[in-house]
Image (cartoon, rainbow, N blue to C red):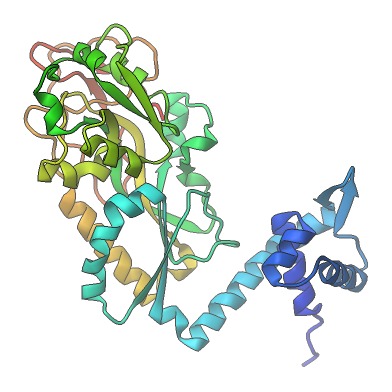
Length: 378
């Protein structure tokens, strides 16, 4: 059998790193070599292939057509080599690498990790936190939890792209499998202390005496909430505080600093314990959901199967129908929603693991209120 005609592996690794970062400097930092060493490896590979892989114009680096054609299969091949190496060293069976978005990690995942460790004591967990879109050719993870949305749901809602919302388009994830953990439902929350005192919270108009807590990622949510809840106008609050992460908003709300809109998934424990309460009945279903993301080529691994089974069991058990005096609503797109008289009450929010959240009716809680239907909005 003839020997394989392959370029030097070190040159291939260097080319892949430069193509991923689009920077000789950053590639050198990743590989712990100088920029000059990176340049030498790229020249070595270009001489071996007989083509140019990069072009420079106005000090900007870009891949040539040949470079773009070469890098995609190379990244897949390097990923396969990495996985095969882990299998041989048995590291793949011992260490489970999980990537989680920050607020889910702090508010929900951390308190539940001991349950998985107790069930699988031989598995070591390596946890990383990131909002970045997942790239199976670049990122080191066995499983991830992300906020996502089906492309069809986004198209129906007519939503603009908002990279700051950190919403993955589930259908576009190549080489990855996405399974729904729970729908993304927004609820108002505050400290129980705000329900009494000089200005108790009974109606939306009472918010003018209180502080609104805002997410910097989703700054429009209070406006949407007022519209869906039927306020008829924006309620001007006493003060406004803005936070970069939901876990910071939770702490502020518990401290009695104001009223917040939060994903129900992240505050269910606080609501059950009574450290937070929901002052108003309106809830907003956005059409999004929290998803478990795994690599399709790793789905057979025992550690991945074990984590998937445990996580779906936990999220399924924790799904609850809304309290009797809280009626589910779906976020509207800003267009007027026609009333739907004499409509039956909607089914509870819960869906089967792996299913996409359905597009729900918009309903305003309270006596004599009417149902509305509208598209979801991020």
